[in-house]
Each structure stands twice: as structure tokens, then as C-alpha cells.
Length: 219
View (tube, rainbow, N blue to C red):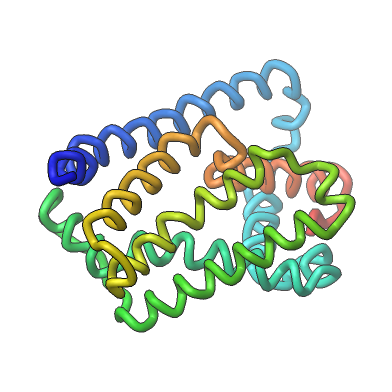
């Protein structure tokens, strides 16, 4: 167990991070090249202002018509995604690792705030799972892989929270925490989770396609 933990906390983490970052860069480059070949007309009316406005509106809770028409889904959506970004980046324990690896650390969240955000993420993940199961139009578009991705995304948070609160065997929970987090990083570029980067491109494209070309808002 100790040797597995040492690998996951050292080389395994570096491998996962490199695969994630490199995979996203390659995927973005490939899709950009593909779009320039097949959808060159989009670039004739590219507009930074329309693209940026579209991205910013879709990043703001209840700022779009779609968000306002689906208030419960929107609450779960942001309750899931906001902690998904804040907790891994600003958790004090993670920043200790950043400091050891790079010689600097970011501002840190108070432990109580990190706990509250983690609980919010887990509740929101459960809400999104129930929505997939109960809404026929969503269930029809969901595969077993979609459910697995949702569970895998929540797993590092559940195991990390349990380990920090000593809600089980610490060593086992930490191995599960690291293994699930690294599996998630590796999967991101090759799955729907790639929207962590593709979101900005697709929303910007929609913004200047609808705005610059048609004079309509994409939000």
C-alpha cells in the first residue's frame, strides 16, 4: 500500500497531469484545424466582443434564458462545477504539494469552506444523477459511460473528504483519492469531460455566429 501511495503521489500524478494537459492541447489543435477546413466561414465573422460576451454570460448563474428556464438544474450545475474548480486548486493540502513541487502556492480556502464546497458538490452530483434517471429526454441521451463519468468526477471529492475526516481507513482512502483523481485527469482529454477546455471555444463560436453574423444573442 505504501509503495502504491508513493507512486500515485509522485510519478503517477505527474503522468496524469501531463497526459491531461497534452491531450487537451492536441485535441484543441486538431479540432481547430478541422474547423478551419470544414467551417472556414465561421472565421469570416469572428468577433472577440461577441465571443467573450457569450462565454461570460454562460459562466454566470441564471444569466442565460436556458439557465432561467431550468432553475433547479442550474443550481445543481453550478453547485457541481464551482467546487469542482475551487476545491482542487485552492485546498490547503493541495497547495502544500504545489509549494513542494514548484516553490510557490496559491491562496488557500479555509478548511470549513472547502468542506462546505465538497458537500455542495456531492449533493449537486446526486441531483444531476437523479435528473438523468428521471427526465426522459435526458435519460434517452445518457449512456452507461455518462453515469460512470459523473460518479468518477465525484469520487476524488468523496474519498478526499472521508480521508480528511477519518471516516475510514486513511491509507486506503488516500490511495482511492489519488487513483480516482489521476484516472479522471487522464480521461478528461478523451471524453466529454474535455468540455473543461472546449466550453470556451464552443460558446465563443456560438457568440460570434449568432451575434456578428445574425445580430442575435447566443444566451
